[in-house]
Image 1: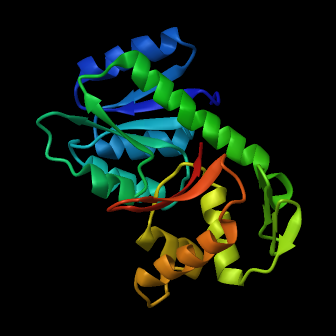
Image 2 (image 1 turned 180 degrees about the vertical axis):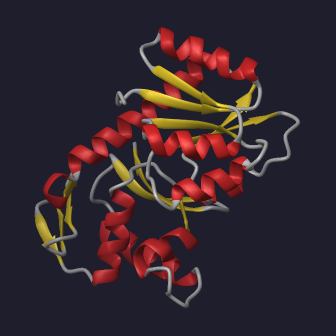
Length: 229
């Protein structure tokens, strides 16, 4: 389907129709699902640009849907939660949600956040052409195992480079320590989160003072992100 197709999953038809009307008015196509199982099926069939997913859903809970889809897709997923919903936003972000939206919505703000996430995804894809990611005074290639800061090649151990590449390839996305262990050290790694902390500390020493336009940032209580300023 079109690259600007959104999938909205919510048992509340009023929420689905409000989001459909607004997003179609600003140029998106919108498909809806009313339960978690339907959401998974539709998601896999249309491969939407982004998913707006209600936390509580019938048949299959939104958190189950998030966990299942995140194992096989990097498409942006924004969790929706009402004021009275039982929902842990921190857990959702740790499981791979890109953002958390609170109902009732400020629809222009929701649209702006969706557009911003899609823009970052596009920019990340463009930067990763030929496996090279570039920012101000920063260039990294996983294929060549090479990091350049300010145009100069920097010696860096493989795991540090893989960790930095993972973060830089997903600017402004928050990764928990457990997710980074999975991505960089693979699922079978038998270690603890302090391994990630040590590698982040070493990377910060290498990156200190290189640019004011980006930073390796800590998101307290969750993990780390490569932040574009």
